[in-house]
Image 1: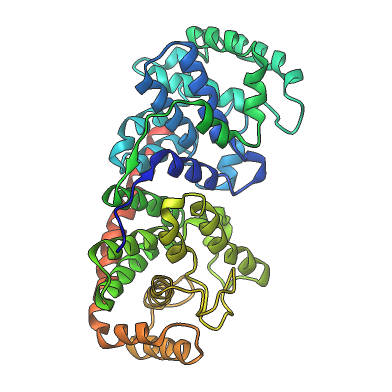
Image 2 (image 1 turned 45 degrees about the horizontal axis):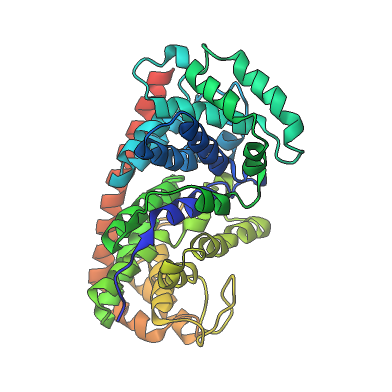
Length: 421
């Protein structure tokens, strides 16, 4: 019997933070560096435990609203102006998850200039300075020789861009050599766990479902062409699990896995996700990496072991010809097999840029062929065939709900851009 989950929120944030930096090695660890710097400044300023906890979370997720590589690279400019409103998008998504309500507000204002920041919270001001310090530091070079120039640069903008009290705290803190060594450490995530007395927050399965919904939105809403996909997959997989006899908790885990199955697409450039034509061989090879990244993002969280395999193995095949691990029937659990069928069904039902969704006969022909070729589990495919109208209707309803949510997001995005121009 599967027991209730107790998943560390901090572990989820570490994995999520690192996932959103897969687009480019040059921005590797940036969000965790900001989290560390902000927490250290908060400690120097003797802030409360709650304030420091929020600084850590906000720092680790502060650029979560920058959906494209172009935005991520522009952010690395010290004089960056948030023209794309990634702070607003980050706020929009983070506030979906109730435990992140305060964090969302901090992220929303983290690019506010101090002299124009009436009403902006202290935590946002700290994240702003921490972000700029991390931008100035080149971790490919020795850190200590850079320290004095960074200190001078920050001091130069005290009283204009940055809050003088925060600058003073940073100036005192940054005299300590370990501070710079820690920021540049390739093991920063481990250091954060070892050195920071974290508030122990664990999510149960209901809360994890809510968290996975937030991640689903972050991944799917990067492109209008994927806006409904994970919703289809998650609900199809959950319904299949119900029919096959999974417990209520197992079916919930299946829905969570469906929400997370394309997490690795965060590493795929928008140019590929949005391409209206058939992908080239090179582009398809890049696209195929997403399943591997889903696995590497989730695998470090031991409590998610079962959900990880269900989510990440959705392109594996019973004959061993899937990807990225080429697992065969011996290695693929029932949950992984369900997810593979759910992913195919969701894909052939939905409209794609280059084609309309298929009709019943074509869909069943595709499922039969895959089952006969020993790519997918025939028994699971038969469940869909026997209950086709139900599953088809389920996907359409998932579409409707996801599209409503996506349209709200687009409306928010357009209104935000209009206000900023």
